[in-house]
Image (cartoon, rainbow, N blue to C red):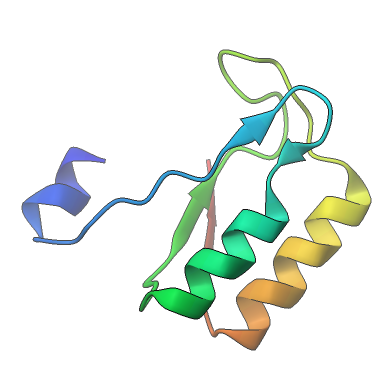
Amino acid sequence: MEAVANLGLKIIEIPVHYENGFDTEYFRKVCTSNDIKAVVLTPSFHNPKGIVMADNAKKELLAIASMHQVPIIEK
């Protein structure tokens, strides 16, 4: 993330919840109101919470990212 900041880009954190994992609705709002260059996430065994992104959330994330032409970088 330091490399991203060194490029002068702003990092926007997306909340991750124990119950639902990655907050896709928040991601949708961020994509709508910002010029997002990429999303970096850990969908399998998120550290430190140990959350695994549900398949339906992955599909929704992909749909949102595709609609806004945002590349997905999986860690």
